[in-house]
Picture 1 (cartoon, rainbow, N blue to C red):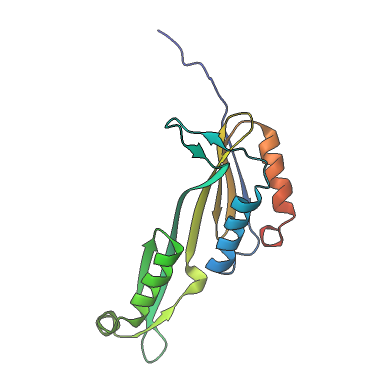
Picture 2 (cartoon, helix red, strand yellow; picture 1 turned 135 degrees about the vertical axis):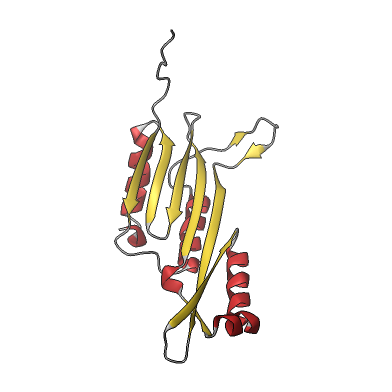
Length: 168
């Protein structure tokens, strides 16, 4: 019987943030700065379809808005969570829930946005000069590097993160 033979070693490293990222605007600014500034030295390449692919791209993202419904005594009587694929949809969906009289009546309370419990997720795919793809995933409370092999990748991301106040 044949044995499985290890071919690659894919690693994952996580930095838990001491303080969650304050809001979706700050979160998006952080993600956009990585894409625009390319602090990890990633390189663009030509995809299988012959089209150019940027050095760093948003691989996937989602944002979850939370709305609590409070009765006249301030007691939570209901909660609505809305997961959205983009920040624009996140803001629009939260506004819709907040202003929806039918939902408020059904819940029996007033809508109050629960920003402190909202979640943000953006995964970036980075193409290393050696030809490997790896991922840097941002959430409100952590930064994760995954599918990397070379320790120099972790070192580059960690060095960058050390210089970003919100990631301390």
